[in-house]
Length: 486
Image 1 (cartoon, rainbow, N blue to C red):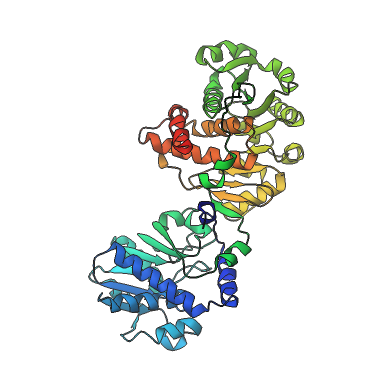
Image 2: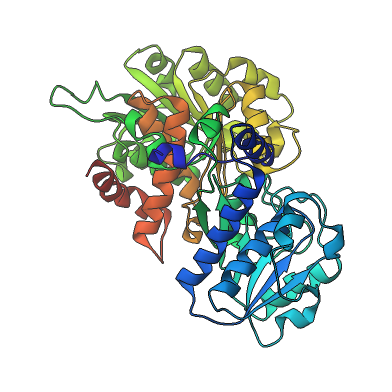
């Protein structure tokens, strides 16, 4: 399996489809369940010394995986207690068959299973859970977390929806989650990512051709998905061949956002960057910028007519009035590759159709949740909303946050998982917009440029560590790019 293939994610429906297709291809469900339970048992044995284990089994196939894991741990000499939600007699299908191989007591699911602080194996519910935990299942989820018990969840932490990452009421907080075939969306989307702990993907015998046949459209955002499309300077390059990016800046009181973005675009590889600012702020910008050129916004029309000026960012610090709307539409109308952020999104609140009609596949919108709500009315989980927005507006949408989602109009999407908490600082979003702009100016396709920009943003923040401010991000980028090139 290639690195890029390993980044593909299952939806709940795709997970079920893969299981069904594997059975049709000659791998029965009992074999998949035995392999899944073995993967859980092996993960426990690898990571912990022998100790008491309480295996909490649900009434479905997730519980069947738990019966297998309990049997194999007991066979290896681990002291195992098994608690079952419901009665053994009501188990069906493969889960009932696996329960028949468990030759030790089956206890009712109850808080006593956590006495003496055992390692917990959470095999209650899988990715398809659609209702909140209740009763003893909820009590055990809350108690295991409150006591700080080590917990291994089977597939996803019980209480987390596999598609949305949302907690359906309470949920287990796992130290380790062992999942099968591919990770699920909910392993990366918050709060599922925080509840899952470390995620280990086990091969349980689903044929590769089955997974390839699903044509998975959602992936974790990582270099293997876009590195081949990254611009790579050659000896024949000159500054004009690497693109000339434009940044529309605001007045002097709001100049910092555009300056951050412009420097970020230059660091990301654009050959030239010009900030267009109001006439009375040009000298202020010029005093703060060196390699970045400065011009008046009165000259923006002339710049847009120049084919060499091929990419433009508008929004950071620009204001939300008619001028911003007009400049955004003029840039889109001139065929420029555009990043629209911040004020350029809010400027179309109440009339998003005017913006959507001008957008195309070379445009990238970078809203946070508040800005998203000013343009779009889609409801649901973050991934679904980002994909629906991209389909509606016809452009790439980056719905920002600790679990940013990058979505293309054709249904492709990437979920980002490398953003550290230190990115919650003023100006970080302006730098992200600049990174994407710099990649667009060099000709990188919009979806890949947006995905790369988001990942590079997180990697740059992680490289700096504590104390990060927005100005640090662009300065850390060269080191990140060196490691990628190496």
